[in-house]
Length: 155
Image 1 (cartoon, rainbow, N blue to C red):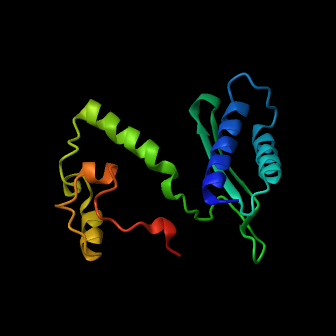
Image 2: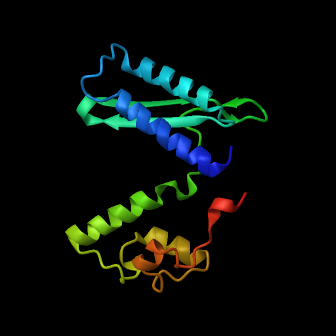
């Protein structure tokens, strides 16, 4: 399964979990039901790798995390909620929407440099890696023209 299909499958899985947890759903043991649901969906999708999921719903008074499958199929290392995962492009749309909402509500300037918005530690890290945060704008980041290295394809 390629990563694009896997990303869409995970998004579908998350949507199914959210639907399964909607208010009024009869869930005597919600956490056990979510773990069983997650395991069944991952098995049905025949993912080669594992899936970790965190659901936080104040409406349901729920803060749950679970995992299933293998973090590393080669050595059969089981996935846990604490395993780091590479999410690559899956968050681009959400981040862009959040930034544009901030622009609407709080007046964030898309043409301002990122040095104006980042904590000094992040600015220092970028400078240490050879970037000039005073030349990269918010708009550059949103349009993927800031010149930052794409880590998604690197080992």
